[in-house]
Length: 332
Image (cartoon, rainbow, N blue to C red; front, top):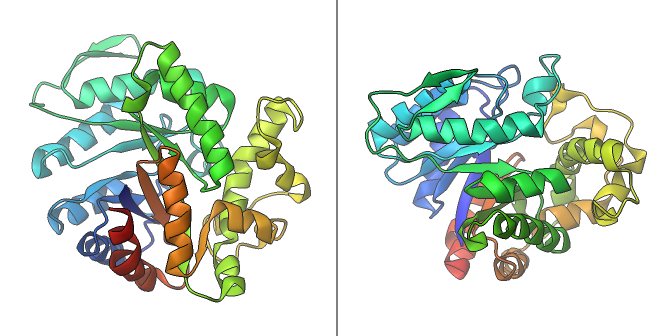
């Protein structure tokens, strides 16, 4: 199992670079950041510094979207980093939640997302693609490589990930839901004539190592609110008892009243009071190292290839070090 570190691109950028360097020293192979231009600093600028100051770390957004940058710009940016540092990027992509809504736009449609996945990958790897009806090819790209991993929850999005993406990003660590969603992605891949085992599975969730569970829950409760944004979209589209989305995912947002993106992904988010302890425990990894290892072994047995640690809490360095000294060696 591989491990990734997920950070927000808060200033100073040097702190983000420092944590990524620490992560690489502790055995993490991937470095991810949020991508929302209004809420945080521009991640691709920071990726250049991270790549310069690490040797093996693969970097990318968790996640970008097809709406805030034109597709040839996204592809060229990845390709430039790859040309400078040796194909060490990955494109995590989704419909766009905070990045689009904070700017007053709706998230992208799945049709647009599916088209963007193909175009961005083709352009970044030097192939010709059609952008807004115009044939485009970036002439200077040689031997470029850009895996594109798609974030998804709902049935149509999961199917699209299986049909088109090189990897699937699931932003929660509940084993029951993980098993259900991996099956949906792999079934869609097989139906599309692809090798379902070739789709990389990445689970991303907060991790907090320690014995004080009450404190750990309060540090990570924000995550249930963030996931709740996507679940609310699913409920509005499919309802809570459609059979198309597991009720284990949809039931907990009944008390959700709204969401202020100024607190997005942050400890102490006042819009996450509706999230019960049970959901925090199910969606996150909390407790002593042994509890993390046990849950990660269960996720690995379900087919998870990477666990990406959301590291937005008051023990960032300690969590990286605990994973490096106790947890990553047990799963490697």
